[in-house]
Length: 216
Image (cartoon, rainbow, N blue to C red; front, side, top):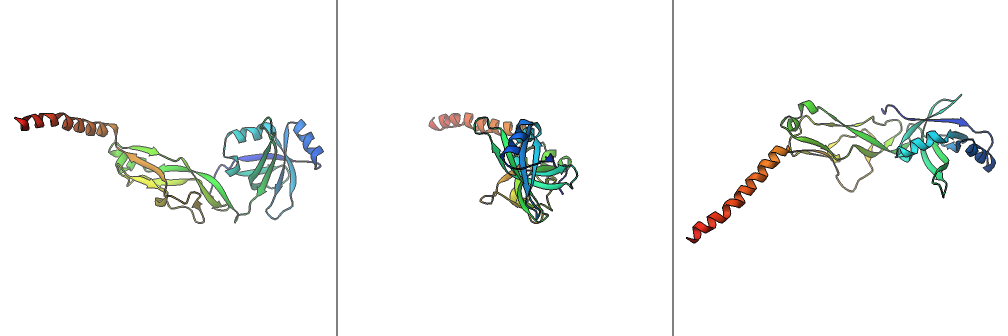
């Protein structure tokens, strides 16, 4: 299961409508609403500075959050919309959706590598190139993997790991389905590449001499 889920700290907003929302913004808060999950919608406020920091971190709309409201049980939510000021591009309202364990959502899951110390290719001097450090998956809220593990033990120089080589958690699938994209590969060490280049240059240098001997 996914660990270290980021929090969204909120307070209940008294009153609804444009007047209450404007007052919240004057107080340095961003008004919002929480809906779904079989419960009634509730109006909330989130501190502007905290929300702005999370927005700058990126992937806000595809990150699962733990919503914390004083006096209520924590609940998993995902943001479905962030309204912004048309001039300043700053957040003015957000919509959060509660998730049941069976809800399906799109999330970016980090990629981790194991058994680097016993990898055949790395022990021969190869270099691990991580083409993707995270992969967007459609997952169920009750079965979110902490990471996608790539086992390097039996990978040799020149081997490539595609998404089709990875066993994903039950109920998960990649969002990219039209191609078998690369996640990582083990490339040859620079010393071997240099030797190959030197051999090619040597063969090219000998070619003119062979032609001169033939003409004589």
